[in-house]
Structure formats: C-alpha cells, structure tokens
Image 1 (cartoon, each protein chain N blue to C red):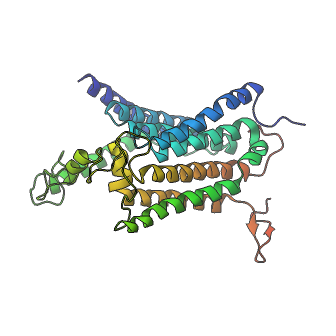
Image 2 (image 1 turned 180 degrees about the horizontal axis):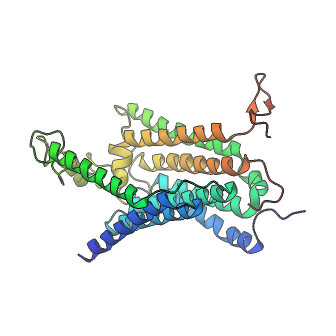
Length: 148
Length: 205
C-alpha cells in the first residue's frame, strides 16, 4: 500500500503546528476589535491550517476530518449569521445598528455586535477557502503515480 | 525620510516583480514573481502603519501562493506562449498610466468645481467638500465607548464592522458567491434529472 501524503518529517511537523495555527486564527478573529486583525484574516489563517492538513496527510485522510459537507454548511451558516446580525439591527432602529451593549473599552466583551460579526466572518471565510481548496484537490480524479 | 526611501525601493521591487510575473515564460516562475510582489506589498503596508491590512495581505498571499503552486505543479502546462517584447509592453503601459493620471488631474485636480477632489484631499476628509467630512468624526469617536463611539479599541475594525458594515456585507457576499461559483465549476459529480448522483458531463467520477 502506497503511503498517502508527504514524508514523515512533514507529517510530524504538521501535527505539531497545525493546531497552533488554527488557534491563532481564532485568536486573531476574536481580538479583532482590540488590536490588528479581524474575521477575514483569522478565517484565512484557519483555512491555512486546513490546507496544511490536506497537503501533509493526503486527501484521503483529510476527507475524513474536513469533509466538503462541513465546509458548505459552515460557510452558509457564517453568511446567515452575518446577515442575521444586520437584520437584528432593526431591533434598535435600522439596518446594521449596533444593538448590543458596548461594554468597557479594551475588554474582550466589548464593542457590541462587532465580535459576533468577526466570528461570523471567521467561520464564513475559513470554511469557504478550505472548501475551495478541497474542491481543487479532492474533486480531481486521482492519478495512480502522483504525489500530492 | 529613511522609511520613505525604503517604501520607494519596495515599490520599485513590486513593479519589477509584477512585470516579471506577466512576462515570464515559465508558469511557475510567474507564480513565484507574483508572490514576491505580494509580500513586498505587505511589507509596504507594515512600514506605512497599516498592520490590519498587512496581516490580511500576507495571509492571503500565502494561501494564494500555495494554491497557485499546487495548480501549476499539477497541471504540468507545457504550452509555450508567443515571444513578446517586454520593453514595448512596459512603454505602452507607462504611457497609458501617465495619460490617465494627466487626464484625471486636468479634469478634477486643478478646478474647484470639478468632480474630482484635489490631490491629497479626499472627499471624506472634509477639506475639499463644502460640508465637513465624516472621517474626522470616525477617527475622533470610533475608539471610544460613548454614545457616538463603538466601544472597539481598534478604529479600523470599528469602521469596517460598525460604521461601514454594509460595505463589509457586500464584500462577504462577493466571497460567498465566488466560492459557490468555484464549487459549481470544479465539481465532477453531477446530478441527473431524477436527483441521484450520476456521472457528470465530463465523464469522470
């Protein structure tokens, strides 16, 4: 049986750093209202972790963890959450009004709906880019003598 | 002054890398030149004090480089493009750019009633327009937790997700639709009229 993915060195390195990359993506998105960063950058970092897993372990292993269905569903859920935040602004007046309490400046739970919007964009962009990469790699019919 | 010289050097580097990306015969070298241009651009963002933009730029650049290299290596494109005159292309592009800039400044820059604001005075800053602009308001109020502020310590995020959240919704919609389009183009397994999974029009899967 042929070994899927890359060599043992790459696999072990990916095992070590993959989780840290994903956590860093979530951190960048969740502290987007306190420092540089935001949902888009965090989502792309999260997708980078998924790309690392797919490239290092091969698409057969990765398709057991990150399926296309999960990507589609979370992509749509993120978009729906962002649109829902926009529509919930009607509770306080008009479209996209920051209806949640502002909190104290510089704290994690501050700025009203901005952290929730960042979370929605994180899920949307991360799942969307990971899904696009899976579509590029996994939907292609496998050639017998090809190293991914 | 030192930072400006560094930024100008990086701009020249970016231009050279972009021209190389257009003119390279090999597709892989073209992709690598594109990545070099993008990374230089992110360093410029960092030097002029835009860390939000720099983070996004460098991360997107890494993902795009990985994707493009993977596609290029997989495709093994052996087609050769016709030889082109790089010098002539550059001269034509430069002439077009100078002409466009001259027209823009001639129309708006030198006349107070023109549609274009004078150079260095964007409309939102309030210097050019009759009524005071909003960007001064944004900068003064964004990073406060008063009634006019947003409570976010990062003013860029405050503008992106509170004051101008409608723009961000449009951006998110663009990404959503483009990824749906990518799925629709890239999938090989089509659905037949009855609804069950079947062979796609290309005959794979």
